[in-house]
Length: 204
Image (cartoon, rainbow, N blue to C red; front, side, top):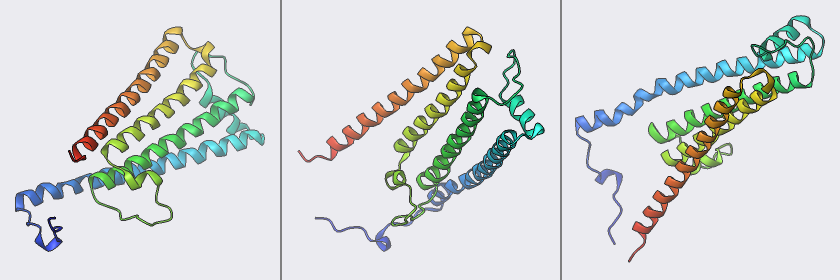
């Protein structure tokens, strides 16, 4: 058996190779920018939640903001807070949370995969999926998150189906189905690749 290569035995990178390898840190500002975008979503979430609670408690300006936010062009504006309005607002909050989850997956998973290890092994708050994250796993999880976000938007459209043209409803449904098929294709492709890698590692 060949002895493992110790860190001191590894060949040094040439200046060009080292420069190319260090270029991965150029992605750091992008991930920091996504963290700022996450802050914006947190602020937006609390503004919407504050207005929803204010509308329930009878605040006129909060109620008007909520009604304006959920009113679809061509739809008769609501004049009071009802079950459908509350449902649309809550779906909007869930949409913000799901997009926030998508941002976390991109920030943490992308940084871990493409920039630098975070050494979270053994940390009590380490995400379960991060222990085996790679480009394929990250791609599949992002596809599933996008499907979840698309489902929320489609549900919001169906709640106000009377305000939308049939072509719009059909188009959104088709787009959602395309997302589903794309996720299935990605998962199937990754499964084939993993199976091929396992077969190549199996001794003959």
